[in-house]
Length: 431
Image (cartoon, rainbow, N blue to C red; front, side, top):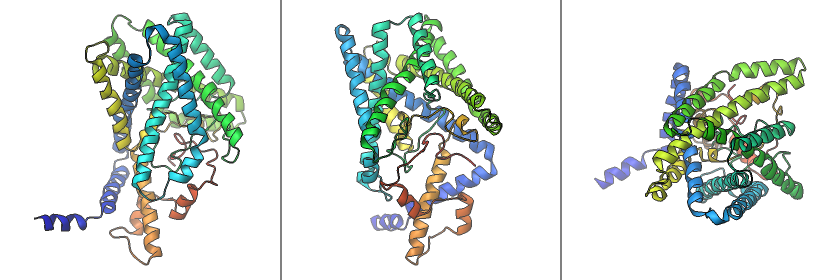
């Protein structure tokens, strides 16, 4: 019996099995494009997105219970802010070194471990910084409607002034794929190259402490207004309203994005630069508000029902949020959706792509399979062998423009500075 099992599994080619599944997925996409689109969106909106929010809510509540003694709130808030900022700046500065050393073209246990630790550290660093800046505002300005309005107006106006208003649009209107060649790359505000270390440090500090803080100001303003004005005595009803309106706004933004792209491209063609910039800012501002409202609804569910906030078992139950929020996106190869990947410049993308939101997971899997096949196919040809069960027609049906193995290897070297790469929104844009 054992010999039969060993013979059976030794005859299996794991890549061929994956290829078979991806080939069927591609065929399903071509035959039933609308169903493929719906399945893809459901995977993002109802699986990945709640897990990302659960991770943030779990770590946030963990800090509430362990790092915020009532008598030292300001000190604890500043400690978190500084710790998070230092970690994020370090990750920005060493991004190219990590890429050169650990982003290998072939699978290895070391690469997997390093990437999973990187996702975890980056996720915690983002929550630390966000929580710290948020609580600094709560401490000095208190949690009031005027304070929330001040945060919202200040954050939004300065982001518009700095041409960084499109930052803050998070999951579900943007997904990050872990198997991309720019896994460790974090796009800074001025896209400083790897060989300019000091300028990269300054760029990283500005991107984290200025742009990052203003995004948190804007998020806090809307969030606190929802807390204080939207059924404050009925959290369940407030939760449901946030879920309905937040999801509805996000879905509408996703559905009309092609129209928005066309309008932006038309304004660009007519040389209406300021009008195009204003249109993109308004469109993405609506998208951002929809994201924040949806986050608020799922966060309330994680806090009140999953973690049982203020209950006797809240400390143990909050780990459910953290564990599920980290493991599920990681297993789905979208762990980098847990944190901020880049600072985007308003109006920085041409042909209307500034209005593009990337809501997909299944497309990423097809891309990955195509690229893995390309590498295996070229390796086999170079050694005079065949790739079992796959022909050129199948290859073309899966993806018409696949990077070669040599190109992939070139893209991960240190001298490729990954200039102008937009990981979340333009890396895998559909044709």
